[in-house]
Length: 339
Ligand code: DAH
Image 1 (cartoon, rainbow, N blue to C red):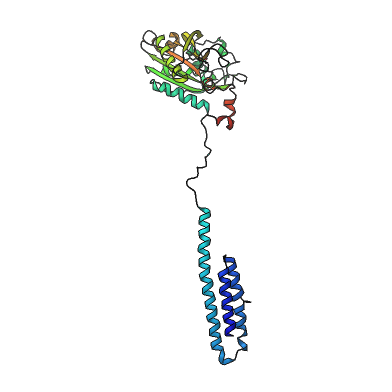
Image 2: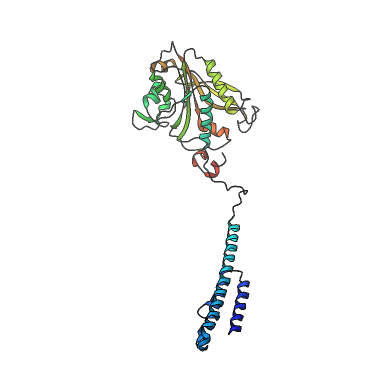
């Protein structure tokens, strides 16, 4: 019996030593100490031992059991520590790896262009003031010297809500609203959405954006208008940019002009971008018509001013060399990602 127990003990130790994983160790435990285990079999055989030898043999079996249990426990701890170490090693975070880039949104090219224009004019002391998109005919047309029979009022261009209310076709009505308030001098730009019943194509949309500019003070002259807009063009398109003022007509300004800038692509030599002319039209402007000043309660003998209107999409298309305005409205993420 003693030899048998010694043998079990040695076998157990050997197998415990060879266990390199917790599952294997558990198998060893079951095969020696489990219900059908070797040591349990020995205990079951106690009935055949002579009664006077039983206490001693029992003691020996218990010792062997304790010995094996302890050996298993010890090895279990070692294996658990090893498993934990392996898990930690596998889960370790390499802080030197480049971070995964989060997909953040992009500013729309219109927004970038608007912020650029605002930055330039705020830098010259202008305020940004917004006006309503749904506007009275009175402000959109009448007070801007656009009389009832003017072609711009034609139903084809204007969305009418009723006979007195329209979706504004331009940002110019904000001029009339601000002048009417009577707080002088005025130096403001007014960006916003405008509407015209145009068919959609590469250069037209029924809804687009303009930025209106207005300055009213004593002794404002056409020279101020030229200087301001020349500065604006240089800031926006680069210091080499030249400007050209072409006589034009707007009902609310007199004299009026359209402003071209030298093509920033070819520097004025003529290319596909400027259709060979070397010049690109960017805005309309003029000295505020005395009649408009009067209608808005300002004395044209005392005050003068100039105004201008820029198409925001036009600036964005030019600045980013986009050849189709529809791209600005489709909001295809692959397009927007480029800005
Ligand atoms: N409102 C004009 C348009 O939609 C643009 C414009 C031209 C605005 C000259 C002005 C201006 O203030 O002085 O075509």
